[in-house]
Image (cartoon, rainbow, N blue to C red; front, side, top):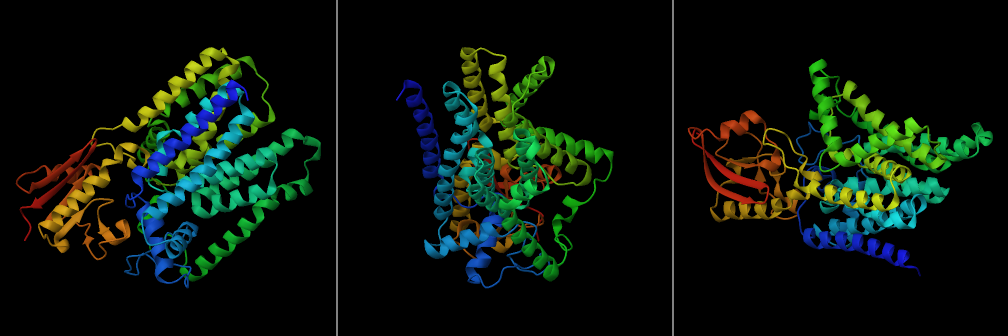
Length: 482
């Protein structure tokens, strides 16, 4: 075994250690951000009904458990099954996601080893897998981490021409949530293009059908699910508060604001350095008219299709963006940028640039905006003190015997604690702002007007403050409450 091979083994081992340590740190952390709905609540439905009913209640049903019908229910089904088999504990989700991380590391390594030299492959592995959004999605046991892993499995299968592996990857990719279906569609187009680049003369209708075969089981399964859902429940957003997210923008100002949000979420948390290198490589490639191989062209098409889709959403929806939405295309951009860089930079300098990229990416966990700019806390490890402060806050509430019927809070803190913690069921925190007590946290990204009102000491006074790192949590008492 050469020194270079030993070095690459060290890189792989280092990534495994990072993910293992993060699992140990987060093993008992409660559900966070959208996972309260997409994992816990939906899993509770299948767990409590013993999988007897596929469709969850609608949003106007009055039930605490409601459906996000446009997302296939695979994540809830898997989590409920794990609770039945292993136990009704939050650590089950964290151990489950760690198993997926090993699959991810293995398949990312196969891709970078295929595309990069032995001297650079290990560094690329670190850059791809230590990115702050990905690490944070892993730390909160997010469905998007499984989606990303399935995307990597599928991409690896396309490059290696492994149909059975592709069918498995596409199943998990498309059945985790709706964004995975978009990625799956772009993957199929890119797959056809990849085969055309390799053997143009052999691409015809029959060969396209053959290429599509691994996608068909998932396609028919999803068609069956969505048809059943629409027949029973009707249109997804007919009674949903999310209907506004999927309606047309209200004017040019809303489009400009949406475009700015897209730009910010694309480059935040250290990602800007990859975009800068990608633009630099693209400029030099166009200027030198460098001939690209089939794999590079395919990855470029895949990236453009996914990016173009979200740009289209800017003009036809009001869907709020999160950095986690862009993990697949950011991975593609990273590979494209790092793959093109050695063409124009000497190998020794390339390694130095890769190290700088890695260091800059790690600072992504320190990107904290002014309070009036909403933060994607599910994309930065800076949110980790939240769990300790949350526990301290609710311990204080329980110790002081405050009435939960008179307590409200912002996002992540409201609702039935049983869904978030898998304990303390029945202790419910409200959402209305006209309440006796309000739990404020910068994690919640509350409306600016309400955040300003909380500072009005004629209306609210702080009762107890909890603070650690970048996270703040304050219990306020309403002086005007009657």
